[in-house]
Image (cartoon, rainbow, N blue to C red; front, top):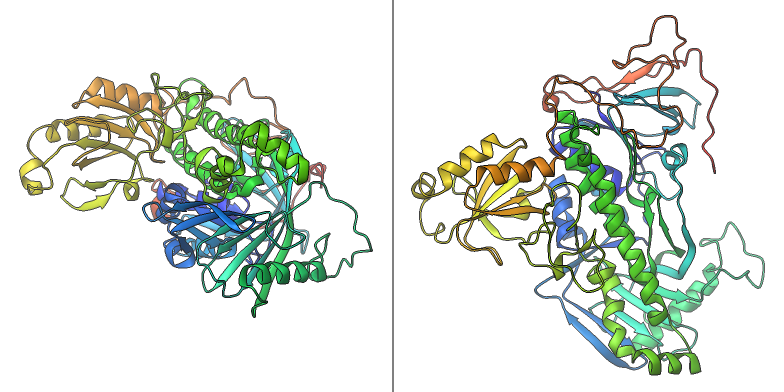
Length: 625
């Protein structure tokens, strides 16, 4: 089959390509830029699930590239109102450019991923067997056609893929505004601090979050809207926009003086002003094309991490594309809900976050004077709502916690307890029992079938997992329990499943008794639970996880879902199902296909040969560009 095409070489696109390579799926990554990763004040907070996902993709430097938080403090005026102990659940905070560089380094050891810089997507066409993409080199104007089995747009908020697919991107353009700076300085505290109504003049809210190497990220909440500056702004200034260099230096000096008592020595490394938007794409899938990351959703108010949700997009989509690629099960009958489940689960989870922000903003937005007093009388004191402010910065709770998918169409049969106020399609894993279908499973010590000890989350990402709860296995040698009890039967059941599955054993699992078997998806979400090695039940769970019975390699191909709206040029002119130009039909240009052998893991995607475009079709200009 043709490789998967990923458009965009940001953290989400690179992580998706590496995750697909773990499933032995070749990928071509088309990047409009030159591949440089300049330093910027952008950063992200990694929870346990996203940190484990990045480790599985090959980025193993997260712990060394990030600062570890053991506590988080919320202050108001001159008093601490909340302190959260993170010793048991540490949080990692790392610069985004370090993450991107680390993912690019991981690509160098992955022959299944081909990174192609300086290729801007200008045209996109689909047929029943794949996707054709036309790119243009912005330097010399050379055009190249590419052929792929599927395409994923990870090309940012101004996504060309989303515009070519004519997918609406509704939402609110300016929910929150902030100024951001990275500063190397010694502060009198070590934990991250959110300071509401600080005692110095001029700031409504200031936040200090430590980064590695003595660097701090400082954020200041700005008034809503984007007022015109009092005097003309120099577009060639170091930090163009409302937050100019002089005003930012004044703000940094006042904030550091307020925290330290006097102005300390500091180095200002980078700065920017940021407007948080709330947008959600109307669709995450059109035929064989998908959206992920900033191309699919935007949020960032109240310290929320849109990039973290983008990494969850990549984790959710990778195993589905891998099954579709290996099993040819992308059509509606059978196996159609396998790929549809990505949109249902991820769009529902991000939509729940956006609703949570809409509900919380009136309670958490900084106010002054009588407005603040009136809100405190009606809704409660600031101390009552401080934990919600911490959730966005820590990636926990409704603003950032790991989602659960209790009502997804694929992989989550049955009903689960519904929390108060929850929607039917998404929930939070931390609010549901560990045995509820759809939750993110906890990270537990496990044993492989050869007796090797490991962690559960480190075994994710390659295939499904069958986890047997068997107290006492750690006491006995592997030779004793491999041939005893349920293990022989469970090994037979795993080999007969319609999806690749690995058998693991654990001493205990929260809420599960002895001899319980749990089927876990490659992204760590629980499919279902059975008592003992119930072959028919596990077979039904596995069939549901892959969207129903699917045709095996070499079987008949299915059409794209009939319910999908026609994308621009759904059928490439003159291109047959095999990707060969029909006789007597003008070709749209040379179709460049990454050759893949029958064993994809052994053959890397080769560099496509750029050729002059013969009989070019009329150029399509992406809307909004």
